[in-house]
Image 1 (cartoon, helix red, strand yellow):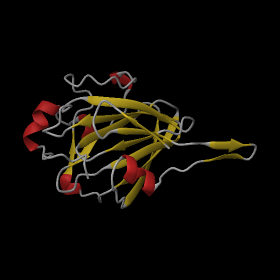
Image 2: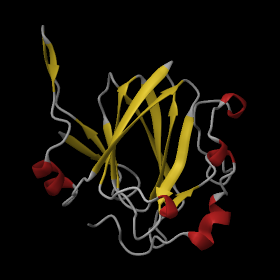
Image 3: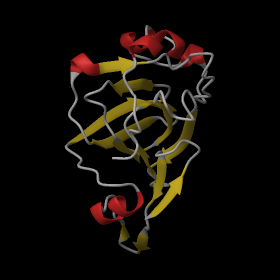
Length: 191
C-alpha cells in the first residue's frame, strides 16, 4: 500500500497495490502492520456501509469527545468526493479541508484521524460507501457542520440547488457557530 500525506496532518490517502489478471483483481484493503508503521496503532471496532444516489451529500459529521472516531473510508461502487475538515483546536490546519475522489475504479481509501468533520458527495448515479471506525457511534455525541458554510468554501462538485441532504444536515450550524461546542483539544492524530 502507498500512504500519501495530505495538507492536513494525519489525513492520509491510501492507494492499494492491485494485482490484476484474466480472473479479475486482488488487493489488500487493510494491513494492521502497514497502518502501525505509517499511521500508528488503530483498533477498528465498527464497520459501516451506506448506499446513495447522485447528488446526495452526507456530512459534515463528527463525534465529540470522548467518543471521537478515526475512520478508514472507501467507495466500493461508483464515485464520491470525500471531504475532511480539521476541527482540532490546536492544529495549524484548524478549519481547513481536503478532498479526494474515491471510486470503485481507483480503489483509493482515506484515513481520517480523530477530530475531523467528514462528508462526501455522490458524483455517480449510485455509490456504495464503506468505512471502519475506531470507536462506537454514540448518538448523544453526534455533531455536524453545514456542508455549505461559506467560510469553508468547499467545492462539492454538485450545485447547491440540486444537492440532496438530510433534514438534519440542512440545519447544521456553520463552523463559527459550532465552535463553542467543539471538544477536540489535544494532538488527536497521534494515537
